[in-house]
Length: 165
Image (cartoon, rainbow, N blue to C red; front, top):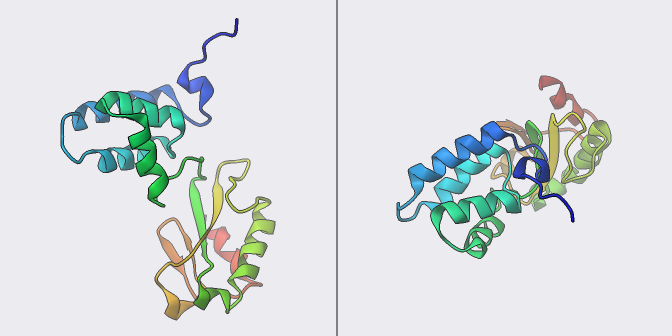
């Protein structure tokens, strides 16, 4: 018979300290109407992402169905079920950016970071994502690293933005 694994063993990147903090936050939100989304936001801030095990912990803590939690996590794009790097690099692939070669920017960043879109670097420093719009069409092509927006990027020199991190 296989040994039962703890959540820390089952989920990459999750520590006991994170779980303790999450449990405390769940207690704070328990019984508060409309608390699921804010609780999931805090859970993602604490854990970095929302794997199935964390979703079940939230569901159990709020005494709601795990499918309800999954429905919210999978619906909203700001939630992720995959680990992210310390610095999330998002490249706009919307029309205004795409016609100005944002696909080449994405390729060059992928090559520089040695990861595919949706992956995390081995040192967990960066993750790379493509997004449909960043709301900065006048600055096309655009990329965002964390909270920092970079516009009017050139596909050849766009990788220079990584040096800031």
